[in-house]
Length: 320
Image 1 (cartoon, rainbow, N blue to C red):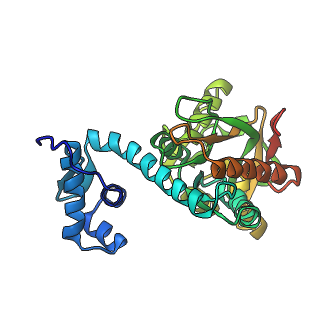
Image 2 (cartoon, rainbow, N blue to C red):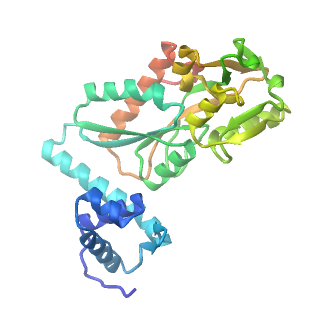
Image 3 (cartoon, one colour):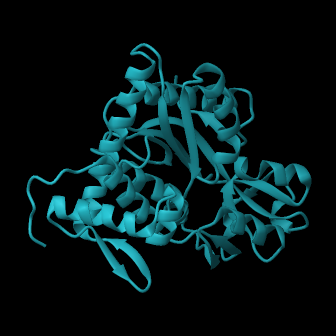
């Protein structure tokens, strides 16, 4: 594609490109943005002409980003974030904390952390629009790298060039099974009893699966993953039906345990532990709203642990 230097890149063209990329379809993106599909296609074409490169590949199976499209999408999100935050700042005043913050939570953390955090944010910072979404931890790390998330909760991560990392707490993982399953009738279950027991777990290289494989290797125990599913609800459902067991965070299934549909036993000798980390994107510019949400997230997590509302968790030494 020839370069057309001097063509203007407009924010609406960038927004159209990102919406097509996120939804994987021109028709879905046009409906979402409430514009005609030909107009949307023109936005993307003008953006490609201005940049002098193809951003999207079109096929019968949908739309996907080219290598340049993936690279530009990171810059595009940063551009729109800067514009949005500048508009909010100067419309409402430099001292008022406003903005849209995207916080990603893993499925095992979202049920326990999201409700109190959303209530605290609405009460303390009404000008901040907190958007919480749920994904697998590996996907959340990618969102931070791409600038698609401001903050995320991850497991067992160190600071990188893409995001900060602060250890908040450790979780002791539990074996879960049907209410009548023999291995979960006590408060604890010995690690040796898990050898060759049928399990449902996430697929490698998902973070939880890596934790379990490293633990089993160190403990000299063979784990039998009969089923694999990258969906927390599937892990819990299969275990509750007695088809197999699963190994998860107890906080993720607290309601099911209270309801009696499932039982959980803490794994001991040796235990399985993972560190819950609070990560903030380095790919996005400094932002007051992000800073206060980081503080709120930390405070909410630590309060849940202190009040024993985060089952199986304990504070990391030195955590604020």
